[in-house]
Image 1: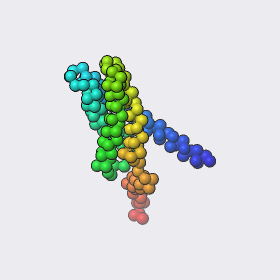
Image 2: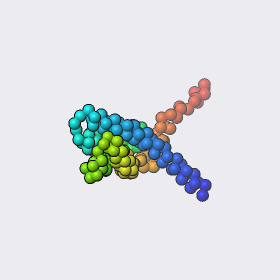
Image 3: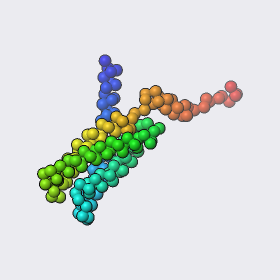
Image 4: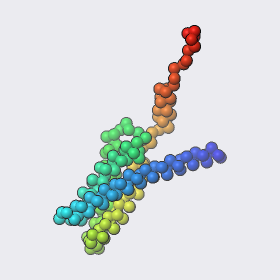
Length: 171
C-alpha cells in the first residue's frame, strides 16, 4: 500500500506543478488578453466582441509559446504539426466559449459599459480556461509513453557514464 500511496502522491505533486505552470502562463496570457482588449476597445472604433476576438487571438499565440516551452516542455515534441493543429482547434473552441459569454452579456442583456465588458470578458476567459486545460493536457501536449521516458533516461545515463579507469600497467 505504501508503494501505491507514494505513486499517488507523486502523481498529485506532478499535477499540482502542471496546474501551477499552466496558471503562470495562463495568468500572463490573461494580462495580454485584457491589455490588448482594452487598448483596442479604447483606441479604435472596433465593436466590443470583435476587439475581444482580436485580443484572444493575440493571447493564443502568446500562450502557445509559453505552454510549449515552459509548461509542457518535457512532453512529446515529435508531432509539432499535429500539436499545433490541435492547439489551434481547441483554442478556437475556447475563443468561442470566451467570446460567447461576452456576446451574450453585450447583445443579449445590453451590458456594454467598459466595466461590464471587462467583467464578462474575464468570466468568459475563466470558463474557457477550464476547457483549455483539459483539452491541452489530454490531446495537445501529450505525455511521452513510459517506455520512451525510460529509454530517454537510459540514453542520458549512457552518455554520462565515464570511461573505465585503467591502471598504470595497461590492464
